[in-house]
Image 1: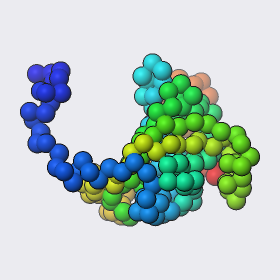
Image 2: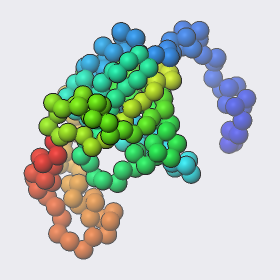
Image 3: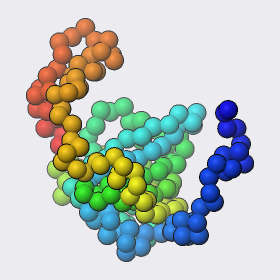
Length: 201
């Protein structure tokens, strides 16, 4: 049976506890700022005006996302594939959801907010120490934030060395892209891809 209403859905689950509801905060406190200081990876979710969803990773040195003030985060846009899916979605709807990871830590940080794109030198210069000076800074106005429980990462065993997958068990990125894009060109080897990536790292 397809579930069509929230009321039908809620009959299957217990009500969230007071602790779960009240753990969400509306600004960046010392715990959140400290977590961000150790985080080298975030995943940003966004949507187009047609409600087409997108999720994209952003990475850098730990703490590459800056806290401007208790309501504002700054994310430098690093070189990528130039599709600009996230940036175009931000212009269209401004709505973003962020998920921050810290290696070896099973808890996650979730932040929801409204994002805008900026080229002000005063914001760009906050990232002058980066190898690649950003063209754009994503400014996120924080609407809600909370620490996400560890269950998902514990179930996945993500950080365990025993759970690591040998890269050779999967086709190379070059092979997968050639097949998906139906390209009539030689397959880029994994080594060639990594060498090409070096320019943007």
